[in-house]
Image (cartoon, rainbow, N blue to C red):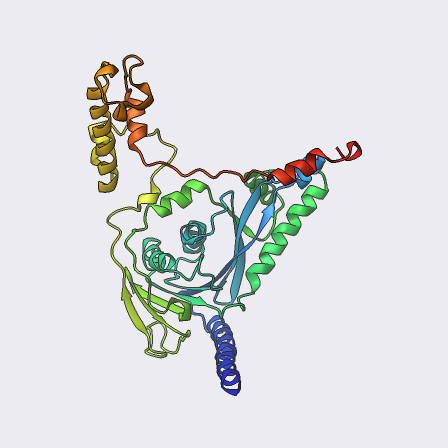
Length: 381
C-alpha cells in the first residue's frame, strides 16, 4: 500500500508541475511578444442550441433541435488583443474542422498585422481535436500555406485548459439568448451569424460552411503514422514544411529559434500526394459495378466478390433449363421427383449457394404455463 501511494503521489506531483509550468510559459510569452509574433488561444465552446422565441411543446422538448458549433479564441499581439468566434452548422470537431475554423482567423491576422511571421497556438489537449497526428500534420503544412515562417503549438495540461476563449463563448451565447428572449427566431447557424453580426459586438465573427471542412479533409493523407508519445507532448515547433519538433513541456528560452530543452525530438511527415479515401463526395450517384470503368476503381477484395457473384449468375443461367424429374435420382430431387419439370432460376441458384443465416427463435412457453394462463379467473383476463 505504501508503494502504491508513493507512485500515485509521484504522478500527481508531475501533473501539478506541468500545470504550473505551462501557465508560466504562457504568461511569460504574452509579456515578451515582439512585432513579428502573435499568440492565438482557441477552444471549442459547448454547442449552442437553435431556438425560437415561441415554440410548441414538441419542438421545445423534441430531439430535432439544431445545434451550432462555436470555435472561440483570443488573439494577443504586442500591447494589444482582440477576440473572435467562428460559427458552423457542422457538428464535427476533428482536426479538419479545427483548421477550417482557424484559416479565416489566420488570414485576418495577416491582413491586420502584416509584420507577423511567427504564430504561437495555445489550446487544451483533447485527443479528438488538437492532440493527434492529423492536427500535427495540418499544423506543419497550413502554417506555411497561409504565409507564416514558423509556429508553435502549445498544449495545457489535461483538465486545466480553461481560459479567455471560454469567456468569449459565454458572451456569444448570452447575446443570442437575449435576442431570442426579445422575440427574434434563430433556428439555424446562418441566422445566428447574421443576428450576431448586426449587434455591433467587439467579437470578430466568421462563418464556416461544411464545404470548407471537406476541402481541408482533401488535403490530409491517409498514411500518417502516430507520433510516439503523443499523450505526453505539450509543445510542437515547426519551421520547415512537413517537419515538427516536439517535447514534453513548452520552452521559449531561445526564440525565435527552438532550443534543445526537455529532450526535443524531430518527426517528418509524408507529403500529401494522394487524398484520403473517405473524402469522396458521397452525394454523387452510385457506381454501376458491372461497368469496366467502375471495376478498375474497386478494391481487390471487392473485385473478387463481384467476380464470384458473376460466376454464380453465369452458372445459374446454364442450369436454368427444364428437365424431366422422373429420370433423376429420388435422393437428389427429393419431394419434387415425379412431379413435373424442375426449373431453377438465377436468383434461386445464387441464394442457395450463399451460406445459411442462423435465425433466433423465441422460446415457447411450457404446457404448465399455458395451463396457468388458461385457468386464470375471468376477472384477471
